Image 1 (cartoon, one colour):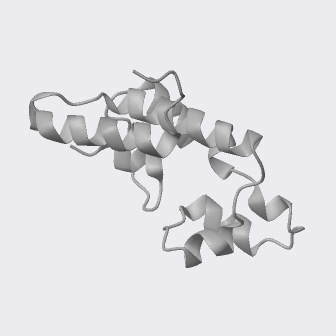
Image 2: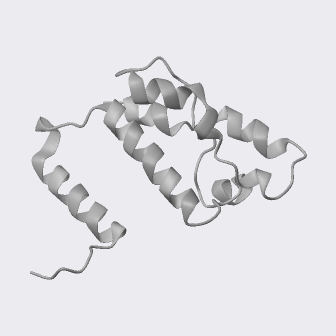
Length: 115
C-alpha cells in the first residue's frame, strides 16, 4: 500500500461509488451533508478566491435568491466572489436542524434536506 495522499477528487469519487453500492439503506443526515459542504467551501476559499457569481451561474449552477441580489449590487470584482452562504441563516439551520424549514431554490442546504 502506498503512503501517498489520495487526491480529493479521487477520494470523493471512491466514497460516492461505495455509498451508491449501499443504496438507500444507509443515508447520511442532512446536517452532516451541510457541515461537510460548509467545510469544503471554507477549504476552497483558503486555497484562493471563489468564482464570482456570474461565472458560477454561467458554469451551470443555480444561485439562491440572496446570491442573485448580491450579484446585482454595484460591488467590486472581489466582493462578487464572496460566499453568501457563510452569513446565511439557511446554512445555520441546515447544519443544526434535520429537515430544516428552508425552501428557496438554488440553496445547496435545501438540496441536502431532500430525501
